[in-house]
Length: 209
Image 1: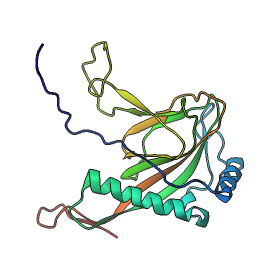
Image 2 (image 1 turned 90 degrees about the horizontal axis):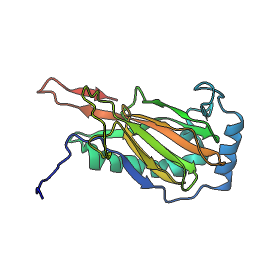
Image 3 (image 1 turned 120 degrees about the horizontal axis):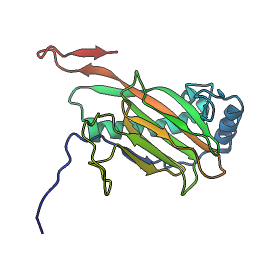
Image 4 (image 1 turned 90 degrees about the vertical axis):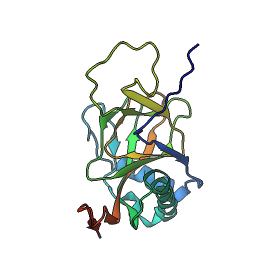
């Protein structure tokens, strides 16, 4: 047997954690109300729908959830990006997604954003998942016997209620046609930064206020 070591470099981070708090009755009522006022057929026939409100986390009713998400975002930046300058991440927009049985969420990425995330409010405990797509073009693609993180063009993760997933906004992702009879409800959010990027001496300084 050949002894070998395989190291992954330049990897794409998929950050996963779980919200510690439960939704209140008032928050659940707000979510159900927005479901009735959602943007229908935003992604075409068979696609899911999103709330008309694109700044859900600015609502007072979600103040506690936004506070915890901000702590999670800070943890992402500390562990993954580890900026040396004084950089402050902040949520730019947030909205609710509603996916009924058989509906899908088209493959997409988030422009005008640095990091994106999803908080799941209602999931089927065994059937719901999120799928990510490799943005890199591979000119050589042999048939694959067994898929792994190195030879796959797409990869999925199971999701459960209260899960939080964060990833670079440029990463393609989507949801296959939903199985199960529940309404899958999630909150998507985008994150940008304030502060100083780069350095003055290298000619790369960018100050964002």
